[in-house]
Amino acid sequence: MDQKKSSVVILMADDDEDDRLMAKEAFSEVKLLNHFYTVENGEELMNYLTRKGKYADPALSPRPGLVLLDLNMPKKDGRQALAEIKADPALRHIPIVVLTTSKAEEDILRSYDLGVNSFIVKPVTFDQLVDIMKTLTKYWFEIVELPPQA
Amino acid sequence: MANFRLIFGKNNRKPMLVLLAILAVFVPVQSLLLLVMGDDATLSISTVPILFSGWFLGPWWAVAAGAGMTICFVLVKVLSLGLNAWFDIAVGGASIVIFTLIGVAIGRVEQLNRLLRQQLEARRIAEAALESRTQQLARSNKELEQFAYIASHDLQEPLRKISAFGSRLASKYCDVLGEQGVDYVTRMQNAAVRMQSLIDGLLSYSRVTTKAQPFSRVDLHVIAADVLVDLETKIKDTGATVRTDVAAVIDADPLQMRQLFQNLVGNALKYHAADVSPVIDIRVSLTDKECIITVVDNGIGFEQQYAEQIFGVFTRLHGRSSEYEGSGIGLSVCRKIVDRHGGTIGARSEPGKGATFTVRLPSSHAQPMDLHSNPGTGNVYS
Image (tube, rainbow over all chains, first blue to last red; front, side, top):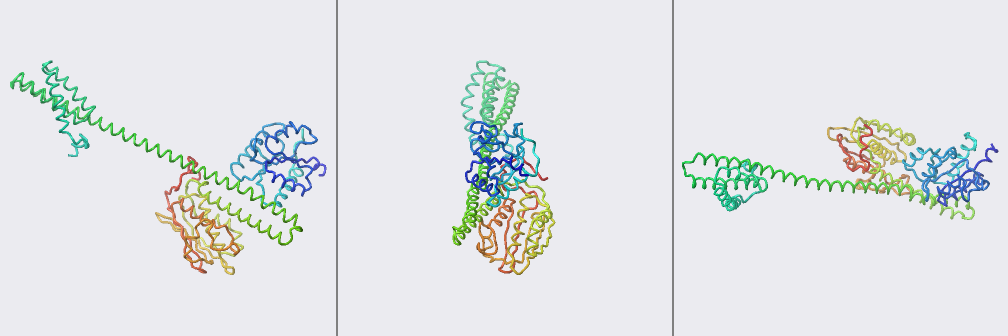
């Protein structure tokens, strides 16, 4: 279990600084802060995943085992990034969890259409957020089996 | 008289003037023609002005031209041949008269044609106006939908932060804040929760139009049963007795009927005296014209003077500190739904003696009282 956890890398793409801070605190609460990385929009997310520019060093930007994706972001939004990731054979096995404020039916439908693995509406309280992060990491890093990383 | 009007139209008020004008123009022309050409060839030529004046100017002109032609034909023939040739003259005159009738018919047809073209044009203009109005409505519907999205997303975003960082503050810096500090933060957070419920309320109010479904046959019995299942916990918690006598199928928006029942029964469950279990009667009676839904409870009731006020947006008869929670949107949503169905909703009550809510809806062939922003979906439930 512990060995598995050491390969845990969670990447969050969210343009909202408050939400990144809150997620950081939540991961520090569940003792996973060292495994938590953030980018600020879809373009940065794609650069990170394809190791372009400042994300070229694998030691500094390790391949994530889980991506938390906000839908509404500047430059490239979450929908576009999601479509690109799921269309790329090298990336599409990475579990993507949408974490957004949108409860809009069309966003939920569209995201699952594009192949998202889960859709979560950002919770109101911090405690709920901690719960979600706990559950998510437990599920994706302990319970499910994922294909070995290339 | 009616036939006369049918043939000549009713707008021509100056036939005599026209006749005189024609006489003045055609008599000399025809006389000249006859004198120059001298023979029956003129007869066929003389029909040309009759037909043309009928075609271009109208039936009265054809009559005038015909009369003019006949008079000068007869005159010129009598003058040149004398009365002995009466038979030839009569046949010629008669044929001119026949051509005149044809001219009148052509004139009238052309007149009606012109009228029809005018009406068609007027109709086209009216249709264009209607079309632009429809587009306007669709646009404003779209804007309303956008507003709902803004309300749900952009307004709730900062609210979530206030609430979340507030709770971080209260839990992480509890010692520094002290008792009063924590109390302030708690009050802030309660306000944020209230605002959240107001935004949710506003959203559900606007969804009555933005998420409207086309009407289909709705079995109210099924709806009522579903709603009672949804409210099962509340019914158990309050020890309520709910009696239903609901057997009716009407044309309505199924989701909205469900919401209507949910809100009315939910209200009846909520406003009961602390020591009395709610007893709720849901009844539906159906006539050819309308469907009357009544929800009767034995709750705390209210003074009749507030019976209209309670349907307003965010109006509540109980303070926030009272045991009766809520944002005050439920009954206004009910009214909006009933309005959309072309019906009425009202309430009768007395303090301490329960309340009766009565909804009247058209029972069949009802049409939504709005313009859908998503036309063409048809009756998705039927």
